[in-house]
Picture 1 (cartoon, rainbow, N blue to C red):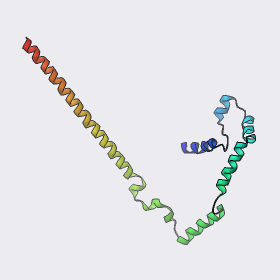
Picture 2: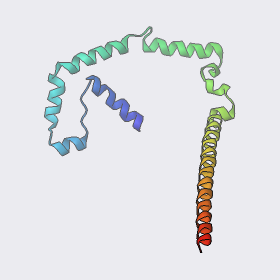
Picture 3: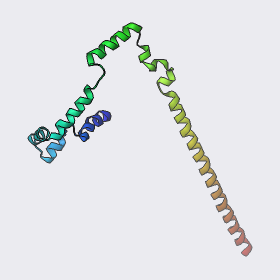
Picture 4: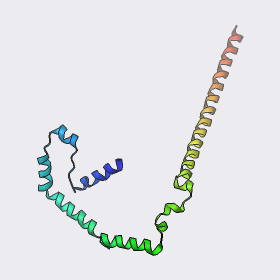
Length: 144
């Protein structure tokens, strides 16, 4: 969903169209007529859409020729396995178990290191507090 929304919103910032969400329009009392009027009368939208259309139409082959090419490709080679590189991966690589395993080991290492550091820190602080208490007790005994 998030990818779709970001793809939907990105051309708006390029000035290709003007989007208006229902909540936005109802909440701010903007009329549909004003929105349509802005898109129709502002030349920014038509020039940007023409440039985007030119980019889309700049292809080495038209869509029908592209479809024919790929159909002939599959018929020539009797397989589409070369077009699906995921089939060449192992079961663990396809499901990213290797990446998850490295991540789990990394997190475990960092947590173990943090545990050791905190353990040593508290051990030394407790030892120093205990030694200080023992010194205080010994000093009290000597004074008595």
